[in-house]
Length: 236
Ligand code: UDP
Image (cartoon, rainbow, N blue to C red):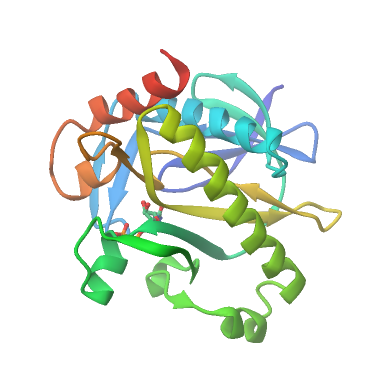
């Protein structure tokens, strides 16, 4: 599959057109950002790790009945995916209080939530991805109520499937961010990535952070932590 023109370059990925107009190539970058792009660095090898972890987890989810944009891994840092129109929402799924939720509600980080919490943010960097609810989403026409019901059901299923899978690898799934898109036929499928950049992963035994918080909080060992997740999930 030959890469054609670059369509888009984001903070962590580049997207290219291919001959088949229903598909795209995603290339993962080594760049890392936090605080809406304010803090920046390069972590050599991160693109390869995130590509491989994402593809592994997307395939687990497909098997569990969640439709995803994954088609084929083309190289260590490049993947062929289905073209979708991204729904402009970041869907946050939380099992344990951490990050912005811990701050907002004054909870100690690590406090278990008695029920899984879903949050929606409007994807807009200039506005700082503000949190929105079902009413904002309906009023702005970002997704229909049927689509939002499907997005919520998929998000809970993804949480169950990934929590179980990661637990077997000695990793606790604290929270994560999902993005969904519409195929040309209108079906909603999971898109974007599922990686240590977009999830909080804690070691099941020690509670050690194995995700982007190591970069956000200047804890060091970012590359080592990402590699550890890859090794536990894929054995290499
Ligand atoms: N997250 C993300 N992209 C964003 C915001 C959040 O991937 O733009 C992920 C983040 O890595 C974490 C979860 O969503 O796993 C919840 O993030 P939170 O709202 O706590 O915000 P943060 O503390 O990351 O600012």
